[in-house]
Length: 116
Image 1 (cartoon, rainbow, N blue to C red):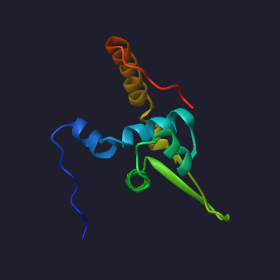
Image 2 (tube, rainbow, N blue to C red; image 1 turned 180 degrees about the vertical axis):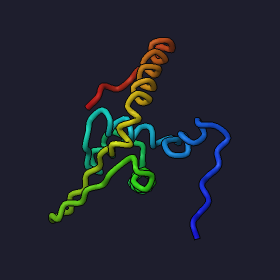
Image 3 (spheres, rainbow, N blue to C red; image 1 turned 180 degrees about the horizontal axis):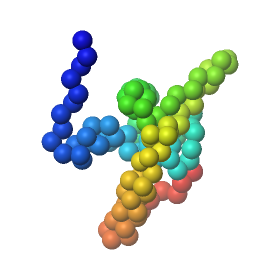
């Protein structure tokens, strides 16, 4: 039996269902701005996220088709994550969030750590 499609109250709710939360936008930003990343590289970019949470968020985004996972047959295992073509369609949204964040930081006097 085929599952019924989800019902949303507005398009923003549908977008947030896939890319919302505390960590997904950050993971998407780093994959967008730095390109393909290994798990450990993503952890270094987001030191406050736990390994369990990063793994969970990456699995959800892979399930939703916005992140792809490539496992290389090596010892130790090498796994890379990248945005899919569908994930790259978020480029304008991610850039707009970044621009707004820069303006907000300037307005409030907050600081942003330098990129690594």
